[in-house]
Each structure stands twice: as structure tokens, then as C-alpha cells.
Amino acid sequence: MNAKLKSEARRKIILDGYVNNEPLKDIATKIGCSLASLRVSASKLGCTRTPKEAAEFRRGFHIPEHKREDYHRLRISGQYKSRECAQILGLLTVPSSGKE
Image (cartoon, rainbow, N blue to C red; front, side):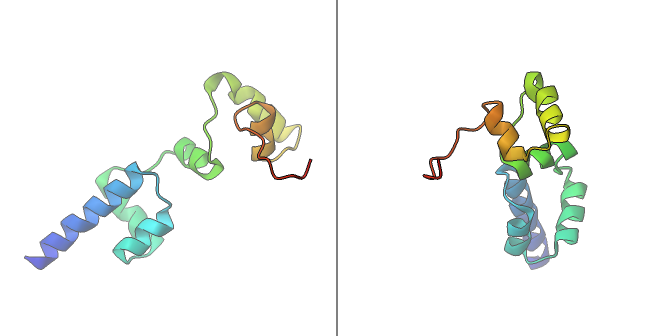
């Protein structure tokens, strides 16, 4: 009986973590397993992130479709970093760090 409750609690933690966009390391730590095991469990539950969602999660911002081509052009030909491209396109505000 305890094993069933543990598996239900594990499923709940995984689903909540993916819905709340928590880092995978944090979710794995909560349930006490490896990242590979977490990914397999999430895949079985059908709650994995698409490559596009994963990239947006790593970047920390969303690129609208009408600015996507400009973003990629800046990234590839302009050789800017992701954050710099986002600031140029107005997706992020420039942080006031006092460097300017």
C-alpha cells in the first residue's frame, strides 16, 4: 500500500514541477532520483517539454513568431549572445547594473 502512495506522490511532484517550469534538477532532488530516471518517468506520464519549450526555458524568455527570424539572424550572423539579441529586439529590458 505504501509503494502505491509513493508512486502517486512521485507522479504528482513530476507533473507539478513540469507545469510550474521548475528546473529538472530540482524535481529530481525532490523525488530522490537521477535526471535520466526523471526524464523516463516524465516521458511515460506524457509531460515532457518540446525542444522549443526547453530552449525557451533555458533562455528565460519567449520569442514571438514575428521576431523569430530576426532573432536567429542576430544569433548566427551577428554572433550575439541570446540575452544581447533579446535586448536588441526589445524582448528584455536592459538591467540597471551601473556599468553604463
